[in-house]
Every structure is written in structure tokens, then in C-alpha cells.
Length: 114
Image (cartoon, rainbow, N blue to C red):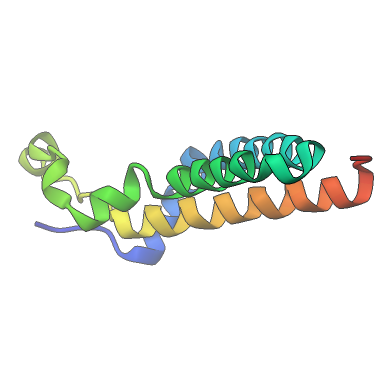
């Protein structure tokens, strides 16, 4: 079973995983803005926002990296194609999620009037 290298997978998956960046930014911006408006009672909403960001970073590529048996790659193996390196995709997902959260934080601190 041959897989692509970690770095190669990260570069190959850049365009297909870029959707995570704006989704993470939107989740962080609106979730944390709503939590800030609610004050002390918004802590549950803030925790939910961070749980959603964590799920966005981990599911599905983090799970596939931990448990490769969850993925049915029989067709790829039969064709002799290199299997995806899910650890590289997980790292990319985690980076995009963090970058989305950071960009939402910058936007909220510079332009937000909560």
C-alpha cells in the first residue's frame, strides 16, 4: 500500500480543502460575536463555537488518519493509484481552521462593535 508523502499531500489538497477557511471564519465570527453579546450567559455558546471549530478541524481527515480502516480505498488500490495521506490532510484542515479563527478574531477586534 503506497501513500503520498505528508508534505506532498498538504500541497495537493490545498485547493480542495480551502473551503474550510471561510467556514471556520464564519463559525468563529458569528459564534463568538453572539457569545460576547450575551455576556456571562454566552459561555455555553462560546463552548459550542469552539466545539464546532474542533469538529471542523478533525472530521473526517483526522479520524481517517487515526483509523484508516474507516476508508474504503479498494478502488484506488486496484487501479494502482497512491492513497491519500490523511495525516497531511488533517494538518491542513487544522491549519485552515486556526487561520479562519484568527482572521475572525482580527476582523472582530478591528471592525466589530460588540
